[in-house]
Length: 382
Image 1 (cartoon, rainbow, N blue to C red):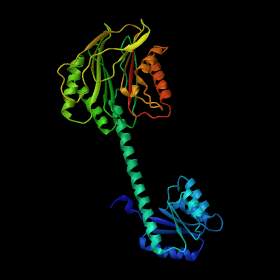
Image 2 (cartoon, rainbow, N blue to C red):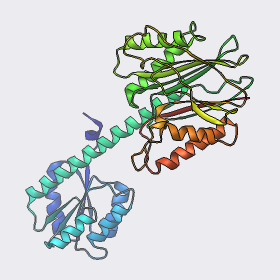
Image 3 (tube, rainbow, N blue to C red):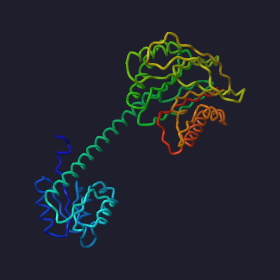
Image 4 (cartoon, helix red, strand yellow):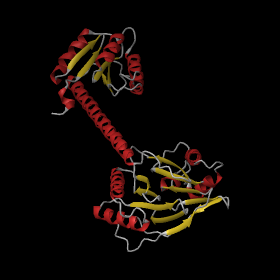
């Protein structure tokens, strides 16, 4: 027996005529529900507020406040607005029926009513209300579970960025839902090198979140290839292929030597990193030959691109949730706009640079919500 059947349902009967109340009580007692009674609108509102019945049968013509006003007040109160209301009235004018439905009533039964009709309509709306509560309960449980998943996913991300002499770093991470498929990691290696991994599992649903977690676990478990970008992507891909999951992963893995300012990059289906050259005062993508995204089949060879960074240069790693962000006119934010925004940053503080990009992204999108996860890592060479 489910929880929704364990509690006796209640019905509030509202009518100023004792004979009508008696007839309703006699008719509905076979349903096994708890029957509450009110002889006027004020009493009905007080009982509804306190008892929260599962259904209200409401007469329209009553002294004091009529049924229309009672219904209006019920629907304007957050505590009672979801209680279904069935009007019972001798008024048979179409305009009165329409008014009642516009006020939020779910049904209308004209007096003199037939007991079987009342039973049928009450049963129908009790069932609808019961199922609605059950759906809401399950939705609340799912939301709670998703919040837990989101917290666990956040624990997989670095809790702080390492301090590297000659570098300043900042990160922006945002999921389109509770949890997503974007992942980044930054490690300071024992030999003084800096390793950066950014990955993006396809989609932003549960499979993408699981794939994100598995990618993080594989990366954290590997200590052999941390300074070898090509070997690292080959290792990650080989193990992701073994999972035989529907979700696939793009990734970029870079190793930086602060002593020589040499940067080595391996890329698997991921967006190209963007570099701002202070000497040229402009930004452009770093051309990196790459391999297809991870999860299809093992790589025979992973190319590595090498470049040298100079003081004042900026570097941006990101996921396609940035460039694929759609605006209200369906246009995409795009790589060109991201490059312009990255190049136009007035300061060399990476946190300020990312804030400016995020602000520009939100302005571009307007009221349209993000439909993909977003991650960015900005690095400034001092």
